[in-house]
Image (cartoon, rainbow, N blue to C red):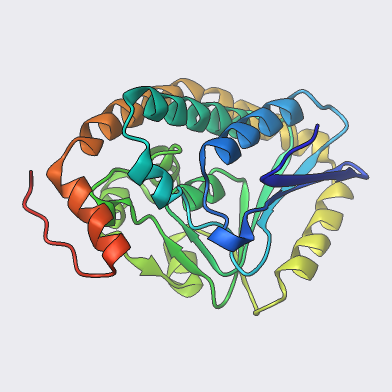
Length: 260
């Protein structure tokens, strides 16, 4: 399949999916979201692939959703399409019959961080910045962010982290259990390659069976959370605080939220 905003390479039981909008920090617009959904659904039905590595082109993993797209997509139909693409890509990612690895360098924020958290294994370089920062523009996490955060740190801590929306270092994220490996700057590629080799030389079918058992029992919960995120995000998009958050981001100033 041919894509414009992502790259996909497959060889020797491994697929590598690369976010490919480096000129805009690999932010996800309509087209990229649709291509990601299409690609992950395609991979879901490809039995030859047993490991998927997700990374970003250039000097960043992904800044998340495209802010400029949010400014111009006032049509409720457009926003409905966005949430449909997000739900499709997350459900496909969660159900992939393969080991998934997020290879983070630079930064993973917002929807980009949600997708990273949806992977089985997360590797981040020591100078990376990690943020579930939807709160800064008056929104709630999407992309299954609520589900994946809760799975990793529990409900109480997930709420606190989501509400704070702080930028975390890999050290902080590792201590919290939000990532699995911290590596030196520029070392994620070689580390992931070694990790892939180790996994492929393991009894990977047994590993995938365990993943299937654990994920199948949680699939209905993830589906429900994606629906609730979609409904909640529609409500948040209509708030004054969201408009203020977007304007403050564009104007590079401190937000003045009013709880409206």
